[in-house]
Figure 1 (cartoon, rainbow, N blue to C red):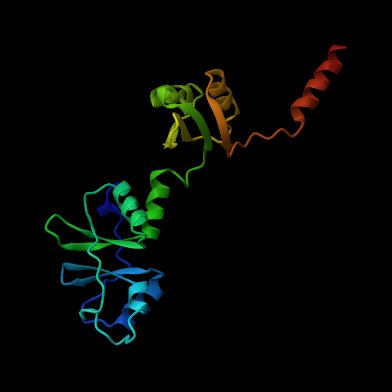
Figure 2 (figure 1 turned 45 degrees about the vertical axis):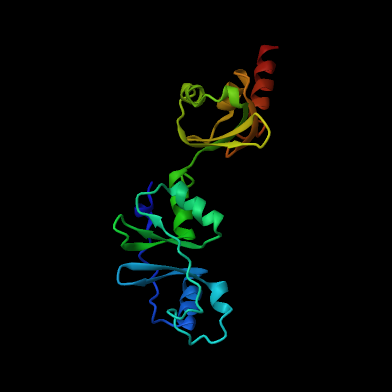
Length: 220
């Protein structure tokens, strides 16, 4: 998924002839702490709520030299990972998107990004989640996928988390079924360490135990 696919049309940009107060009001309306300043299709940069609140006269125009404008943007063809990295590193709530001619295309808000990540990682799809701990020498996603597919399931999404100064890796899998007891057993049979399991719908309500007792009674 690329930046151009998750641009929001709902949030209008600011202009240099807008006042600090108008910018603050718009940020409050859209629950954002950053908004782009755009003249025509030319992006001048981002203004932040914190910087604007430090300006005593809220009738000041955004074109004034006292207004700090951040030169931040992403290209329309960058991957969502790059958008997330920028939002995280600079603690932004929104980032402008430009095309290859440096024309302003729109804004990606942090809420847009959350929705995109939810779609990309199949967050809204029903399924079970398994967290494996493995050594980086044993990191074979192909083998992990084979185990999942052998249990008549499919991997909806996966990601790997590494640890500093360690050869350990955590592999988080989301699969397309919620009864994953047999799949967990398969991983353990192949000597994978299963750290956590979520959304496993199999619940032991005692019926199996009662069934076994009944069968034992019949065999007496």
